[in-house]
Every structure is written in structure tokens, then in C-alpha cells.
Image (cartoon, rainbow, N blue to C red; front, side):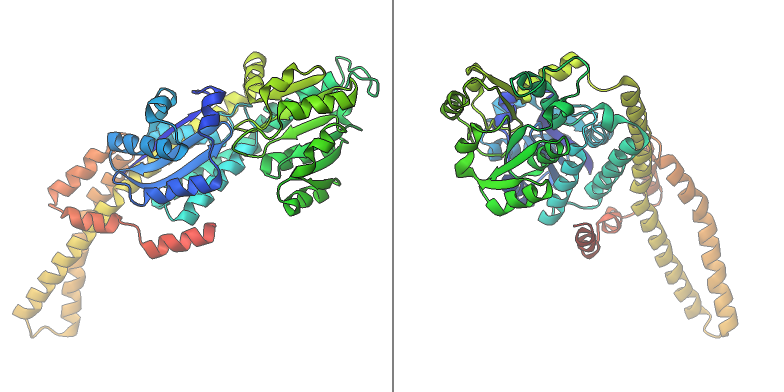
Length: 458
């Protein structure tokens, strides 16, 4: 079985294509449920964010796994496979491991080094565990990836070098809207955080990105209002930032009053239409309005950028800005890349060595069976042996077998950690004529143990 990832992200697909494949938690769960009946995929984790949709799997076959993964993503997004295929990337085995470690550490994000992705990877893994489609392979992989992500942020300044989408978005629009009668003109040395102080902001949605936006704005001194379909959820975020919550039905009333609108709801379509913004701007009488749309699909009608006084930034514009700015600090990026290379090497080496363990165990079990059979034969032929002699014979036979097996089993474990280690495992099976079913029985995870692990990690 081998690790496979099939997906698309902001690096391989335009924003409109990412909008088409945006999935909520319920849709992700349905894909995971379908993996139970898959012919080529035995485990799966779906990483679905505003900038990526990836299916990680333990695949029985390479081509069969790709076909099945692509079909699952196509069916559940409702996008024909022929439209998705040009944007898909495929990584296998060591490259798949490397890709996930890059993702978890923030190296593959639109804003390099942003910290939100680590939480999103953790949530993707938790959801897969809850759905019962994680086993030994992906559990080890994702637990390691989460540790790699933490290490990257602990040992480097990648988190400060690469700011979050919220921070980058606010930095791009706040200076423009601050140039009004009520705000001082921003100088080249003025921080956007200084300019936010005293502004009023409406945050639409109550998910993790919206909560981050509300916290960022409040910490910078803005007055925050949260609008959400479920008022209780909005109220919890509002209370944590010293703001207040309103129902979604009152969004139109508040757009005319605030200076900033940040939206990230995960809704299926536009919730801030052109007419709403146009009417609000008439009421504002020339006061500028900054809009930060972090949703996929878009929450805000893109044409509102044509309304005089509106400064709109969305994921497409942020992607262009990141390309122009050149991303995070080069030294931090290189430091994290070095960590990833080291961790990938350690993980793949350990995994190659672990692959031979079932063969070694099966060999030991076969040897034990041979020893027991021979001891039984000796006792049958020499029934008059006293207990002391019998124990000496048993100990001697076992000692001889252990010594004969020690060198080949230790050596095959060492050789198995090399890139061509699988050939040594195969040779061991052939030389000792091991029954493949015995090896498979050892390699098969204990479902009770795996279930316990899922419960502990949930």
C-alpha cells in the first residue's frame, strides 16, 4: 500500500475553478464515506480549504488510485472530470509525503507561512478519523505532518514572515479607506494596524477565518460587529472580541454604517450583492468602504469594485499581490525547506524499515512452529527425559534458532531502510518460503487498536 495525493490548489488552478470545487464539511464527509467502498483506496483524508482541495489516500495501485480519487472529487463537487483533470496534481509515496509536509508548514500557502493551514490540516485529519477511514498509514503520516508544521513555526520566523490572508488583505485595503475626512492620510511609515484603530468593521460569518478576522481587527482597535445566520455562534465570537452580534438579515443596515466589511461564510453563492453595496454607498455620501472577501465561492459580487468609493480585495487580488511581493522572507523559507527535507527523509526511512517488520515477525512465528514441532518429536522419541534435561534441550534448540535468525533479520531491517529495501524483504520471503498469508495477517492492523487510537486522537 502506498501514499497518494490527488488535488488542486491556487498553484495549479484559477480562483474560479477553486470556487467550483469548494466543499463544506458535510460534502467532505460524504467523500470519506464513499472511500469505505472503494476498490483501490483503503484510507483517506480530505484537506478542503478556500485555496485547495486534496485527497490523501493509502492506495493499493497507482493508476487505480488516481482514477478512483479523481472520480470521487468529480462526483462530489459536481464538476466533470475532464474539467478538473487539467488542474489536478498527483504526488506518490515520498513526493506525497513531502507535499503534505510543505502544506502543513505553510510553504504551499497563498500567503507563505500563514498559520491557519496547520489547524485546517488537523481538522481534516480529525474528520477522517471520525469517519473511520484512517488507519496505520495515514495516521502516522498526518501526525508527523502536524509535528513538522509545529516545528517549522517554533524553529523559524516563517509565521511572522508570511502573514495570514486576513492580515495581508487588511494591509492592502485599510490605507486606501483611511484617506477620508475622519482619518489622517496614511504616510509611507504608517502601519495599517494604526489606521484601523477607531474604525468600525462588520465581519460576516462565524467560521475560523471570520473569527481570525474579528480578533485581528479588535486587537488593532477596531469596533467589531459579527453577522451570522446562527446568532448564538456570532455572539460567541463577538463576546470574545468585545463586539456585538447581529442576525444576517441586518447586514444591509450595517454596511452603510461601517468602514470595513470582511466576509467569509462558505455560502453557496453571493450574499453581498451589487445592489446592496450600491445603496449603502449612496447612504454613505462619499465615505469609502473597504471590502475583504475571503470566501470561496465569493460572498461579494465582484462588480461592486465598480461602485465609486468601494475598495475591494478578494482571493484573486491577494494571489496577484503575493506574486508581486515575492512571498515571505527567503531565509525563513529556506530554513523551513531544510526542516521539511530532513523530516521527509526520516519519515520515509522509518517507513521503509517498518515495512519489513511483518515479514520478520512471520519468520519468527514460522521458526517457533518448527521448534515446537521438533521438540514434540524429541519428547515423543525420548519419553524418559527428566524435567532438567527436557528444559536444557528446549533452551538449546531455541538458542540455536535465535542465533541463526539474528543476523539475517537485523541485516534485512537495515537494508530495508534504503530506497531499494523492498527487494531485500522479498528475498527474505523467498529464501524462507514464507506464506504470504502469514505476512499479511501480521501486517493487517488490529481494528480494535485502531479504533482506540481514533478515540484517543479525536
